[in-house]
Every structure is written in structure tokens, then in C-alpha cells.
Image (cartoon, rainbow, N blue to C red; front, top):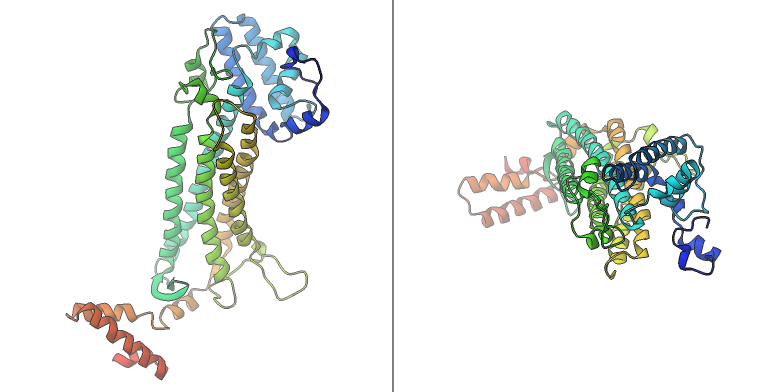
Length: 408
């Protein structure tokens, strides 16, 4: 690798196989904007504190802004010869400013640098997912209002149980996602603290102003314990956990709709624009969108287990194992975002067969519980009423008539 950030005490160059195994630029390049934003706040603080000359601080700050735009414009393809995105950006900075660029890393370690970048990235992703949840909740609420008077059979044990309103079905999923929003809000409050200034693990003897940097980056404060600041990945684990909850809820919704779209249920009709066909069977219309959501939930669950397993035996403070947090976090974010992005337009496209739902809700002896409760209101003990209605159901089934036909 081209960068030699730690090579002073080594006599041999890094084996190319180790360099390839050790590198992370192939996936951590998505952090480039956060890395530059964090570095700009850091170098501004260095100038304010007189740790480096103010004019050099300003020059580095501007050069970083230029590098950010150049990367966005595709002028700097990510080069795997550099270990990670942090070293790649520092290399570009030194190319621009020479020795002045080498002062950026003053008072900082890659340990607290990457911890900062990851928090900035996760925080923005959490904010975006919060907006997506609100959009999905809005779609569910619109359906709940639209279908508030439409009857359907409710199920327990996947057996018809009692009549319910289709609107109540959508409200149930709305309630689940509201809890997800609450969890995401709580997570943001816990994670929104800056690790920068913790150094490798023990802080710095330089007169850093950690609080100023935290404020500049819109954190609520700093992580006081520097050991914890560089080694904590609770915020990643917790994000994976709440993402798993979101995906579990989306998967349950998908499973209900997969059942409803079968010919056996026929409660809904998939829009052609949101379904696929079979390469062999011309008659098929497949709910691939729903099946992918159901399948991708397992992917997110796996990242949660991977993070827990990776962290469970790490001694304080930083260990290279922590490089494994990024792909888990990034893929979790991408997966949840993709699923939440497709669900609202999918919901808007679906046609619900409310006439059939109404028919099914008022057949199959689903009125048995209502009949039982009417007996209870007349003073019949519950157990006796339950037994009596059960007998009526049996007789009605044998005669092929409804309960109302039998009891009226």
C-alpha cells in the first residue's frame, strides 16, 4: 500500500496479501463525505486553539471542501492501494498542500476518526429511515381510513376467527411502525455524542476543545470516557436491532399480503407494475416484491447476530475486529431503506377485493362469539353459553345452514 502512516518502526514493507486482506477502502469509501466533514471541524478547532497556525487551518479546511467536490464529480477514483477512506483523503490533501496537509491528523487517531465517521453516517441514515417510516405510516393510515367500514374475516392460528374491519388491519401495522419510530428516536438520543478527541484510547496532551467540535457537528455532547469512545459499537448493534424489528414488521405485512394474493384467499389483486410473471407458466402472477421483503428480513437479522458475535469478546479498547462493523451497518441501512422505499407505492397500487372479504366475514360461523356474548348479557354463565353455542355450531355445520338460520 502507498500510505505509510505507521511504518517508522518497521523494517519490512507490508506483504501485498496482508495489504489486500487488511484494506477497507472497497466498502468504507461511502464514508468520504462524513470523513471530510469531521476533518473540517477538527482542523477548525486546531486553528482556534492555536495548535496549528490559523491560516494553515483555513487552507486545510478549504482544500478538504475542494476534495469533497472533486470526489463527487468523479475526479478521484477510489484507489485500493490506500488502506481506507481516511488515508485516501489524507493523501489527496497532502498532494494539494504538501507538508501543511500532514498537520490534519494532529491530535487525532484513526480510532476516534472512524468512530466519528460511523456515528455521523448512522445518524443521517437514522434520520432518513425515520422519514421513510413516517411515509409508510401515512400510507397505512390512508388505507385504514379508506377501509374503516369494510368487513373482513379476522384470523387466529390462520383460521377464521371473528369479523374485523379491514381498516383495523392497517391500523395494527401502523401501531407497530409507530413503536419502531419511538425506538429510532430513543436510539438517536443515546448515540448522538462525539468520540473525537479520544485519540487512540487515552485522549491527547494537546489543548483540544472536544466540546466545540461536538457542537460544530451537531452532537449533544462528548463521550467522556476515551476508552469507551473508540471501542463502543453499541450504537451500531442497537441500530441493527431496531432495523431487525422494522424488517420483522414489514415481513409480517408482506406475509399477510402474500397469502391474500393467492387464488385460495383472493383478498387482493396485485398491480401488474408491482408483480412478476413466470418464465415457464404464462398464468402466473408472482408477489416478488413481498417475497423479497420477507427474505431480506433474514439478512438484517443476520447482521445483528454478526455484530453481537463480533463484539462479545473484544477487550478494551480498539481492535481491528471493529472493521467488521461497517459492512454490517451499511448493508442493514441499504436493505431497510430499499424495503421502506418500495412499500408505500406498492400499497397504493393494490386493489382489495372488499366484496369477497365481506362475504367471508359473514359466513363460516364467525358470528359465534357475538352470539355467545349475547347469551352472557342475558345472564347465562360464560362456560354454559360457550358450550351451548358450540353445540349450535356443530348442528348448523351438519345441516349446512348458518347460525342465524338455526337460532332464529
